[in-house]
Length: 386
Image (cartoon, rainbow, N blue to C red; front, side):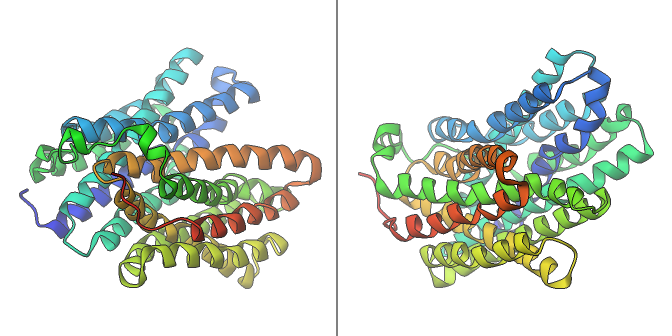
């Protein structure tokens, strides 16, 4: 390793920022490409589902492979690959090619998450795993938060065919990765005998319950980040105001990502997870009963994002301790599978919204958040598989 541990963690966090920046292009580009390719709402929904499956549900699969095979070499090409896929969307002329490009973009996202978090765990200084993972998680949240703002501004000034210019940041990060020596680290967890079989992992209550708890948390998080703009537009606010409030929520997520792991190192990861989940209930419920631009509502929305994500760094550390020899798969579960489960919950929220209204349905997402507190509290920490 040619860089210091701190610099290496920051570099991996910058890679996460870049990765999630490209991951969040689709929601902004969808209204532009729908008329261009004559996409129906049904096909648009399928496209979003393909992106979600490829970018979230495949993460544990990549993590499983990385725990058993040396795959750190992927660190160099993975970001430019995803960037090239999504940034060439303006040149696509068929629906089949569109679905293929979106699937490949999602796969690049899935590959980077367990790889980056596994390397963070390897290079972090002893006793600093939580704060290192916080920086890594925060990087992704920042990239995800600012992607809509950047893409809206870019597409208002230039046509879609100019999107390849946005590939450049990925090439810069690729150059730093190549110079860092991180791509020469082994992703294999100890020896093959230490890599735990999937059946044995699923038989461990710490692994199963933690996945359930984080999936319930992500139900609330995904529902808010997906339907917040629609809720505000229906309430009479402009798309600009709606987008700004979404950025405010995601900015809170970034703060929670930075602080959550550091607090976990100091006070215990289980305590921080339970505390953050419990504290997230109140500002989330307040905002959905006072949705708007009043100062108290804005503070509540920001705090909702912060508390919802504050538990994520500690959940990754917890999962990696509960799954010794399978750090990649553990992080894939916490950063991918949990959000995939949350997406299923958000789909149920959307279906419920057709019956009782979007504002009421979003308010009810505090129920799975409450359930996640009890599930996390009942989860043993840490339990090592043998």
